[in-house]
Image 1: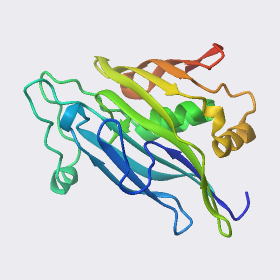
Image 2 (image 1 turned 90 degrees about the vertical axis):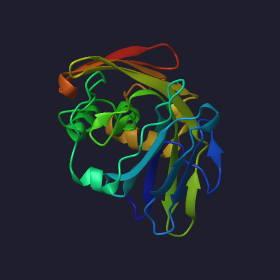
Image 3 (image 1 turned 60 degrees about the vertical axis):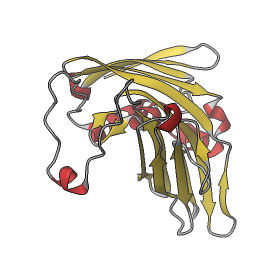
Length: 235
């Protein structure tokens, strides 16, 4: 790894003021050499999503994973749920609401770490579906993009790829997930270099489908590549 800082950018990544389908805008800042997601704003009008989320985390030394995605639509005749305040979040996770699915995970960080060892592409996509230790609820959409920061050359970014899908509660502690990627993740050069250094035989997903059980402690996902090749990821 050189002194350059690499950024794996997961989620709807745009310049300031630009919005994408679903009524969500995101802004990235690489000025300090660490590409961090600085803002995320949602708008549920005209059929848009209720929520959006963003985060920047260290992938490995010099490499950052940043994502932004939107999820959850208001039901007919109802408005979006109220966003929790900072005081609400300080109280810790809320108890499950009767009649609503409980999508909380036993250890979200361990889930992503385990998937990273098996297929970093899958870990990146699945990681974008987590929100405060739980799965997002219902349909979602986002974009995936990679960026490269160099102290002399500045920041370069490849064109973003869109992904969509849905999370559906499938019982106590279980959830079914589906992720569809528009485009080819192999077109992301910096992400590709990182994955090839770890495992050249890693299957690049066009779709990821399957079921996660026991609040994330176990699961089975089918990864299908653009050419139709498929493999199972189990834990």
